[in-house]
Amino acid sequence: MAVEQKIELGRRGLLLSAGGLAALPMVAGARAKAAEVQASPASGAVAPSVRRMLGKLEVSSIGLGVQNMHRTYPTTVPYRPEMHAIIRAAFDQGVTFFDTAEAYGPHEDERILGEATESFRDQIVIASKFGFDIDLETGVRGSGRNSRPDHIKRAVEGSLRRLRTDRIDLLYQHRVDPAVPIEDVAGAVKDLMAEGKVLHWGMCEMGLNTLRRAHAEQPLTAVQSEYSMLWRGPEDQVLATCEELGIGFVPWSPLAVGFLAGAIDAQTRFADGDFRKTEGRFTPENLPHNLALVALVKAWAERKQTSPARIALVWLLAQKPWIVPIPGTTQMAHMRDNAGAASVALTSSEIAELNAAVAAIEIRGSRLPDAVQAMSGVEAAPRT
Image (cartoon, rainbow, N blue to C red):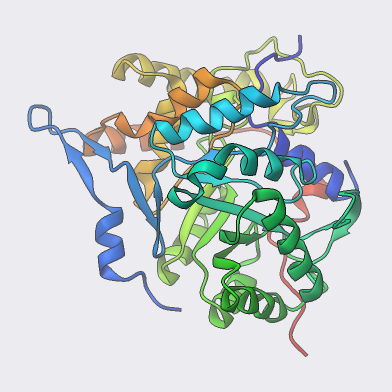
């Protein structure tokens, strides 16, 4: 049967379509602030601070991904006033970090976020992204990427209008354009920063050499890539590079499209149009094996008297003090549950135990179709 829960469905669906398939260390003060914890004298347990630092940018320790509020499945359109209500309730619950992109919709999720946050815009951090070949007026999506400097600047003007703001707090390059030197991209962002239209910038799923080149041209605040108990690829080199350069890290799909929240079981079959149907790790052959990870998360949730989603999120928070997950949802109850993940207290020994248990589970199957995966780890053209 098809899964009914509407969780984090926009990002890879976007990439399927957009891809033609459907160096200074972090300052000591910032690092100390990022590592703040709340201690329980009785148990010795610690819970992550409700605030964290991405470089020099302060945000809530859990953000909200606004990427599928315009449409979840191909025929499902969420009730727009309810999406506004979820965003506003997240702010009331202490969430100050909201993530979207011009490509989500395209354009529509920026509009939804702008409509919902206009009254408290100055109290939050808004992140958006550029980088796909999207018509700047109609939102019609082409088949490739476009990070030419003139296109970036015009794309940001459109994002500012839709977000109802005069600046984007954190602007990412959504995917590296292999045809454009990253120094040219950084130069365009630097111009936008000089105009006050962009305050910080970052990159998503980039090659590491390109990351270093970009950071040398204009220091980055954050890197955004997929990272969760189900996909731990950034642990190979990306996190170490971020730590070396003083760059924060923002995991997208921290709940693995609902998998770690318990939304998928061995009998789950995905409807046509649901991008998870194209992922090797969710095939009927691999899914039963990979559910060992869900069983682990559920056991820890029972042990800590919390939800599986909060265990998955607090595990990410425990990896580095400069990691800030951005779970997305179209359901109020899920948002409230996710936003409270920083209240879960784990001792240092519990963190070590959980890390060892996660590492012991082998995940079978690819995370993305080949043509979509090909847009990750890309290196930009050399500067001539």
